[in-house]
Length: 120
Image (tube, rainbow, N blue to C red; front, side, top):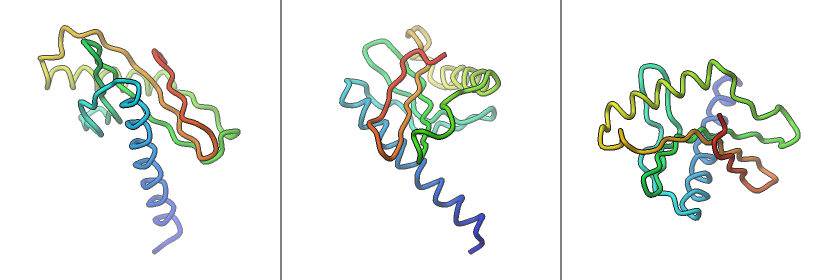
């Protein structure tokens, strides 16, 4: 296995672990899982959670070093996620009248997860 492929596999495992940690955090907060890794032609939604009549599209970010690179979603990524959320609603019209929100969950190895509501 090449070094690049091994690093990619480690990153994939870390990403999956971070998503499950985010789901656990949100379940404790009273959210329910509606979808995980919902793929669309414009991109993937990491998590779709619901609580009462609130539908939350959650982007999960993992960093091995909490002091490292800042946790920022650029305008292009935000727009891509908004388009993907629109496609999710189109595929699940029963959610069309629900309030929608975009959250960010930050997972690091040495600190508690951070849930940022209304991240953008």
